[in-house]
Image 1 (tube, rainbow, N blue to C red):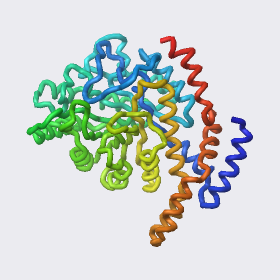
Image 2 (tube, rainbow, N blue to C red; image 1 turned 180 degrees about the vertical axis):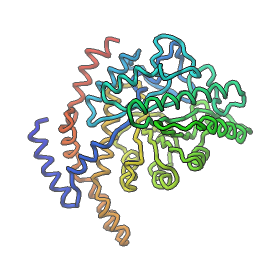
Image 3 (cartoon, rainbow, N blue to C red; image 1 turned 60 degrees about the vertical axis):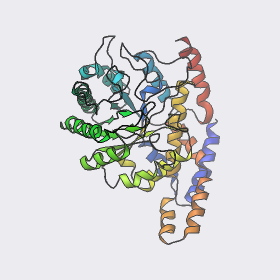
Image 4 (cartoon, rainbow, N blue to C red; image 1 turned 90 degrees about the vertical axis):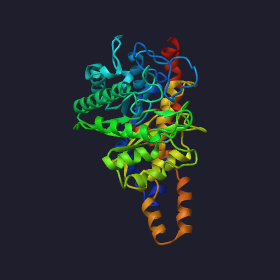
Length: 417
């Protein structure tokens, strides 16, 4: 798109937004401070780099067989760098423990160390990328249906040790990058059918978490993620919403809102204002659930838009970490990265462009008609011109210009895998 057209459209949009009290230049500055935590597992279908990696298990499923998935650490890093070159702004990368640089050697999960992620630390520092981290309790011979809530002490202690080591690795990452590494803890633990031992499993889960979190670290932050169900674990989940919220509030841990982990009629956005009253920060895993926790590519749909609006309306951008968590193997994986990331950014931009103060005053004055009218008019404002300017200033493709870039990368790189 011609630079002059972008500038002309932005000048008009800037004037339009100024008429409702919004400084678009200030919003663009705020967008520079909005960093996504982009998930490494979209590039390879959540397989990781363990030599004995098998099929996904633990309530996780990737669908599709589009060619060109990353097969090793070099290909995955190349794909991530290419994706980042098409996404405006600077962003973080979220690693799972199964993505260690094991050098072809089998290292069981209770034996992982910082050295297995040193090359990731070095690579991230070289490319000015901050890292986040996750423990990985799924897709392992000892995963079964229960990990940290398993009544078998041998299996439970295996996963406790794994998670302890993940926290130590996250702290080392944070220290190296001089910025806290956000470590998310999610386990699939549950049951396919009716269970009568819910209290026992959740009590064991709580005891495991207490032991895991006993060691305090300076350069990492703990997140805990809830879930409604998993595939093959539909009837019971140890880490339910009530359990995880209670634990996070009691122990002042970061609560992770995964937008696919609730009942389809629940509104994840509505949880933001409540949770921020009781926990220090929030972590978001933004995905798109179609009928169930299906992890479709994030788009500019109402749930994502509303989530961003709630964050802005609560003046909580500084207390919310925004991560992505979808994995689609049915389309070009690099394209999935770019579509989802840019959709999340567009949603946040629209939220920042909303005249919140004006609408808030209308609501407090009891002017319901004016409030609703203003909310509707804000949707039709020329946010796209502001987005185009943001992309241009960041030196990334504007509009649909990223499509041929991805097509070229597919022809030259991924199609040859």
